[in-house]
Image (cartoon, rainbow, N blue to C red; front, top):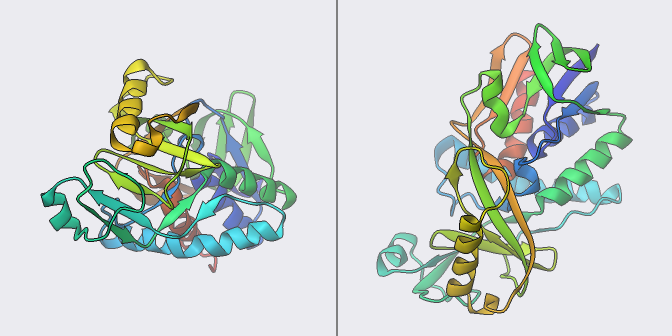
Length: 308
């Protein structure tokens, strides 16, 4: 019997497990390691204003933006470095209407064809793969087991998979786009992105239907958005991304290809709460999972009556 079983070891689940374990709770983490997990493909943008968040979700995003520098200092103290930047995010206006809407009166910080101006907002980015790796290493050092398991059922204090069963006082479902199989109101939205060798902007930069940001000494360029389940990156996605990067950003005209990424965003209304007694769910983070993960973790602490 463990106190909390967290199903899903993406950034949302791993960070919730980390915050719970820091406060002395016995935690077990389970993950199916299914292809298409959002964390391994996502941009990791911390951009609450360019993403158009409002109301309580905007407050949740601003909480995440304030939270990350301290978390990264904690992880660095354990010898776990995470790529990140907090110098701002930019929206580049490509029309006079966009220029007026965003009050985009600054010059863009990166060459963009058709730019009519830019506006800088508070924000930044965190490399999601780095962050997940660091959290899992920290959890291992804190005595939290990571079980490779494709969970088939939860409820009544049990987590069941083909090879075994785990009893827990509370189960947290943080399974991203696979929430529908547990009755949660979420569906997959496929996203594709490219990693390129080339000069990067100083932070996340939005221009038209896409964006780019620094990643591992190069550029993360994204992203497509298509309903349904279709594993991998296809020619449609590759063509859209390559055309967007080539036509919109002069520094990327000769950029060399490094890697294609794809994953499923959990699309639906953001929900972090109790589904039934002893069963919590965190779902519907869309493409803002990294930004909203800190608020989600602290919401879980509150639901369990644990002091933040």
